[in-house]
Image (cartoon, rainbow, N blue to C red):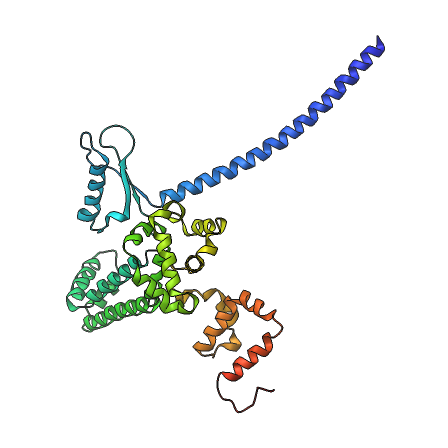
Length: 361
């Protein structure tokens, strides 16, 4: 009897230890699942945030009985263009539809994502410059001064500010300041965005317009590419390859994808070897930050290039050093070649005639 109880006790003891190990393992599994759940929730929140960035919900719009999608779309277009004065095109609104239940349901409007529409950016900049130029007139200055005079009549402002406006030299002083500010804004706009005209070729990477390009080839964008990167592409082969990409026969392969997905698809399907010039073009477009002014691209490395000891260097030398600092990865590859130093000295010596003979046979 004692032996049976002892055996049963040992079995229960082993069962308890086994269950304890299972509980520990399950606890670790639950922790891992909770971490994965938290990561998935963060990804979902990020995806929802990205989707909401191009969405707009409009409340208070009267809903017709049996209103269809086209009527809702026309209602939103009329609201944006006629009432708000936004002048939106049909291709800028992806869709518009009613959501929820009840009467006069809100309208969800989705904007089209335009990442490579350089023409639209250039037109927006031109419109902004034209608007500011129109402000540079005596009539607009008078309107501005009337508004400023109305604002300064408030009792919350100090009497000193009101007395400044009543001085005899105040009209001339404020008029000069008004035009100086507008001139400064115009100068900054023209200098910061002067290179955007050279980026028209980025439209060739807009996959949402490939079906339009198949009917009307973007010759102007292709000419812009050859003006900047003529030595890197074969013009005849590139045109033929782009016509192949734009063709409706390859719609499932190339059309409607993001640029990164298109490049990945071409690598996986080995289309990059069949269409090498088009693949090189898409890689070029993917590496150019089209949404930033070119004058700002080297700011991150200027602190290391333009030190206090180099504070008096000219702009040409500063640009060259900044370029070397930005493209140091390519420079390291060149330095791995055995003849790199000799080639560099020979190139420097042949650049122009020098008093010292740097070439030796």
